[in-house]
Structure formats: structure tokens, C-alpha cells
Length: 199
Image (tube, rainbow, N blue to C red; front, side):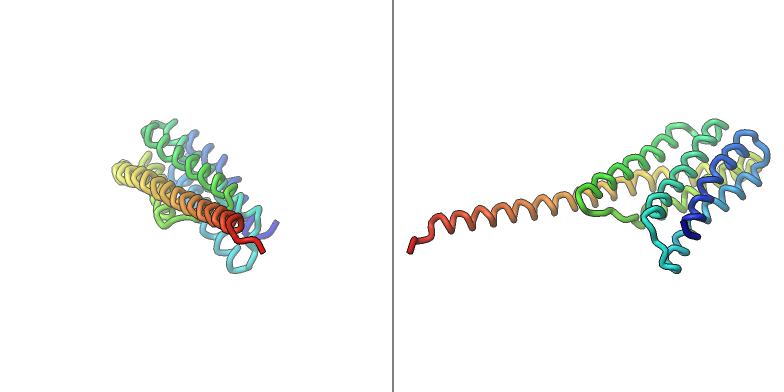
């Protein structure tokens, strides 16, 4: 346990607080502040881990999990409050499961798929959209902006998912071609030895 991992854990601990604030409709402003504070820890833990040279396996596992818990909890709560269409949240969360599955398969094959620029844009759009939608429950003028931002999140989610699948397929294809090339090379060597003149 180190400081970056403690910051990541704080993001997880803020999830039930956020859900309670949203579903009890205690205060949209306080809920938005809690969400933004939790979202900011996503940038803070990464910065601390790199600057202090404290990147750990636990942190690598916890960080994306904390992100998914925070965003999923916020969106599902907003669906419960009827502030967000359920089909849009299904696309957004479904994309997270699909990309996580791809990364797991890639890891089992011995390579990694890092976060793309589209993925980072999606995360930024999600934070903006969720904040606007939470505040929009009290300030109607922000509701329209939140809805527009939500459509951008769906667009980035689909776009980045396609990009991840293309990257995954490209790496799998390259590995398959390399294996085929090695197999042909081995077969060629065997044929050459078989037909080599005996002394």
C-alpha cells in the first residue's frame, strides 16, 4: 500500500457516497462536487505513481476498476432518476465490458493494449456529461448541455471500441503471421536436411 493506491481506493470509497447523494436527491451541487473529486483522483493517482516511481501491480488492477465503478454507478443512478436514457448507458457500460474482455484476452496472448487517445477523450467527456446531468437536475439550463455531452460520450464510446478492436485484431493478425512464418521456416529446414546429400 502506498499513496497512489490509497488515492485510488478513496475513489472506490466515494462511489457509495455519490450513489446515496444522488438517489436521496440530497443536493445536486454536493453530489457533483463529490463526483468531480472522485474523478480528479483518477488523474492524481497516475501522476503520483509516475512521479514517485510507485507503479505497482495492485495499482494497475485497481485504477481501471475504480474508474468503471465510479462511472457505472453514476450512470445507473441517473437512469434510476430518469435523467438519462437506459439504452445510452447500456452502450457506454457495454463498451467497458467489451474493452476489458479484449485486454484480458490480449494479456493471455502475451501483449497489452494501452489506453488510446480516444479512450482518454471518452473519459473526459463522461466526466463532463455526468457533472452537467447531475447539476441539470437542479438547474434546467444545464440539462440540455448534459444531454448533448452524453451523445458525445456514446459517440466516443463506440468509436474508441472500434479502435480497440482494430488494434487487437491487428496484433493478433501480426502474431499469427509471425507464427506461420516460423512454421514455414522450420518445415523448409526439415526438407533441406532430408534432401541434403549424405557423406
